[in-house]
Each structure stands twice: as C-alpha cells, then as structure tokens.
Image (cartoon, rainbow, N blue to C red; front, side, top):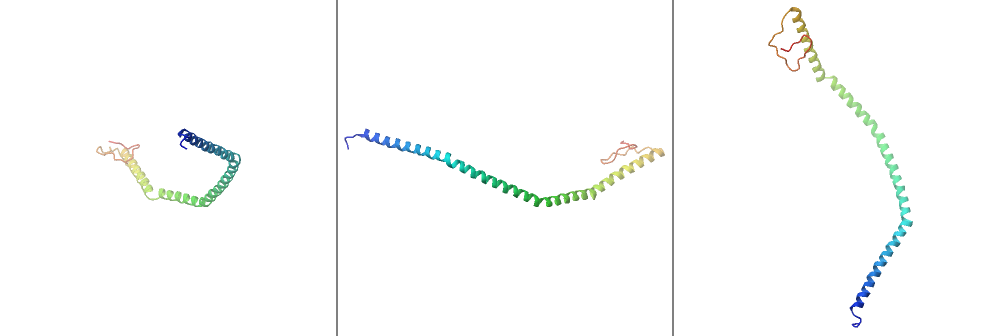
Length: 140
C-alpha cells in the first residue's frame, strides 16, 4: 500500500468527488424534468381550481355582508341627516339668525327715523363687530 503513493489516493478521491457531483447534477435534472412534465401542470390546475373556489366564496361573503349591512347603513345615514337638520333648525343657529335680523331691522328703523326727523346720528357711535352695515347706517 505504501508503494502506490499519495498521487493515487488523490486521483481516487477526486474521482469520487467528481462522480458524486455528476450524480447529484443528473438526479437534479431528472427531478426537474419529472416536475415540469408531470407535476407542474397538475399542480397549476389544482391551484387554479382552488383560486376559483376562493374567489367565488369571497364574492359571496362580500355580497352577503353588504346585503346585511346595507339596511343598517341606510338607517344610520337617515338618523345622521335628521340629527343634522334638527340641530340646524333648532337652538343656536336660529337664535343667531334672529339676533342678526333684529339688529339689522332695528338699525334700519333707527336710521330711517333719524333721516325723517332730520336728526343727525350721534358722532360718537362706534361700529361694533357683528353690527350690520346697510343703507342709512353710517360708520362714524
């Protein structure tokens, strides 16, 4: 054994490595060919079938959810509009409108009477925010 030398053992080891690598490559190509020719088509068909099933069930679920939630949505929307209209027609908005109209009307009447009676408006009168401007109303 000692007569063979280390070169022989290196060649044998290289041959073993080369053979094992070549065997792994050929086995990989064999599995790849088998997968492409047989399994890939069948797996894609099954995947397409499952995708259609999921799509159909999802669509049915969404439609059912929409149908069940639609009456509640309509009811909530109607209630919201009623509340908004009620708030707008009552309370603060009406009070503010009445006050503004009253101030405008009283200022117009005062100015008209002053013009008819020949009185001058007081010169020390200040313009306040929210006080209307209009015909016969001066800002002195």
